[in-house]
Image (tube, rainbow, N blue to C red):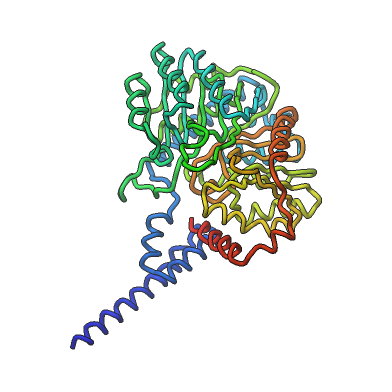
Length: 489
């Protein structure tokens, strides 16, 4: 009799597992990349119960309805303001033709179509490649603020390096400047002095909010690895910063010897107002507040500060498409001479791999700069699984020498296009993270960025194709397993 009960339970369990497997065939492939769908299906077919639990927690990248509505609301304002600015400048449909070389005009139009943020002239863009110098420049600009300072970082931490930055914010607030701060709830969670940081901002009258706070399943639930990875500072709508630097000391409070090299751009001109629009969107999503008077600033603070073109491209699950991936692949397909990519985490999808290997096949010199230092083991192995294919295609790959990890994120196309920002070149940055990218087609700015890239190459060693192909099978296996897990998005 006892065996009969266990037999029935076994049959029920067996049938239930096959029900889960068959259900996965109907649910998983829907609106999902083929490689991602195959990885999830393999996981669920091997371990149905655990696979389904993992999928329900991590398998949906859409933001909650309230956050999507907030984005739609501000998109409407941005479209209205863009039309107003165009009328003030007497801009017309030929603006892109005047600011971007012909081969990139489709890329600029694509970005505008995805984000409603056009390519603008009249900017001054200064790349800053020294960690402490970035923070010093930010502090100096905050000291000159008259009306508002907007701050947004994935990681925000109080320590010896960032203490002067927080002091500058407190001083500005004491002088009547409105100071608002956004920080990612997950990215900023684990660092010392967190409570002190939040208390100091509250005592100074600085309004600070965590982005994408973690919630239990329900109305406000988002999968826990959907993060806001943007980094930006805007002062009075006149000066802005964006790039790869988080507001934390250079070793990120690590216990090993890794330190980080970063790249940030300081921006003046109309594109600063596009940075501000991104902040307004994120502020609305977290607080429900529409900062109305800033809408006026978007027009009234429009001033020409230089001759450089610039276009801000936000991306993330709040958008229908993967704005950053579409922009990157579009620009790479347009390359005629060379492509130089500097990025710490390179785990591309097939479209990006195809764009780069196709460029190499048609004679374009394609160079990728990664880091020898490893701060994320799975990502490091996953990205190295792509090296052999790219080396065979003729792509040159360099590793920035440890212990410094090159955390800068930019790419140069020929001598007349460049993008820089917070976005890695991996599936996480394309599908899950809210990111920010600045694109410019100004030759002077591109030359400055190329000089920085060349300085990185001098501190790097090139990977030999033959030596790489002879790596031990154990390492290749680890790389391929990591590559498989990276598809579970």
